[in-house]
Amino acid sequence: MARVLLFGRLADVAGWREREVEASTLAEVRALLSADEVLAEALAGPGVQAAVDRVIVRGEAALTGISEVAFMPPMSGG
Amino acid sequence: MKVVLQSEPFDPGFLLTAFGARHPEAGAVASFSGYVRAEGGGTGSLELEAYPGLTDVEIGRFGEAAAERFGLIDWLVVHRIGLIPAGEAIVFVATASRHRREAFEACDFLMDYLKSRAPFWKKSHGPDGARWIEPSDRDRTDLERWETP
Image (cartoon, rainbow over all chains, first blue to last red; front, side, top):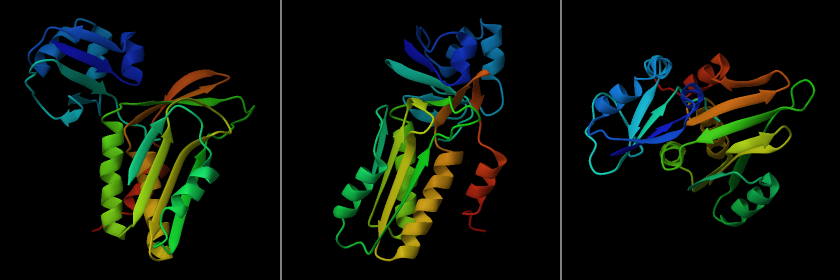
């Protein structure tokens, strides 16, 4: 089980900010979210980063227990 | 050495007075207050989204780097999140050091980081609707000034 969070324009594109999914890897989360083609395209866009349990990860990551997975578009600064 | 993210308004003058009073050994305190600019009709606002637990940790890491680089005695970053109307303070940075140059430079350095790389997502609300904002070229080149060859 993973709690998925979307930030910035990704949440606008998807129409939701938070949702729980059954997945044991980051790749599975991406695959599940890709059922929404518009969101899949946005997630594949330049500069989109993923974080697992509030740590930015590059590439693949296993999810253990209840992990929080966040997808973040390019950061805007304050 | 603190990062505060808050949705409530703050008073930069009050923060500066309290920060300065905590550091009798500092000969210099520099600060910067940033406000949401009124554009055109002056009815706009900014919406700042943060990821608590990641945004504050990342900013804290940068603050520690600034403290080490400039030999700061202390630093403070206060940043508004949520909806912020034009005219209100959105960011406050204060730095304390033994002598003025380090405090000035560290404050400038921290603001360049906050404006270009800090993990926020920013939306502008104006008469023509809302749009997401990304760092300007100026924000990026301002940060590059601090890169050592």
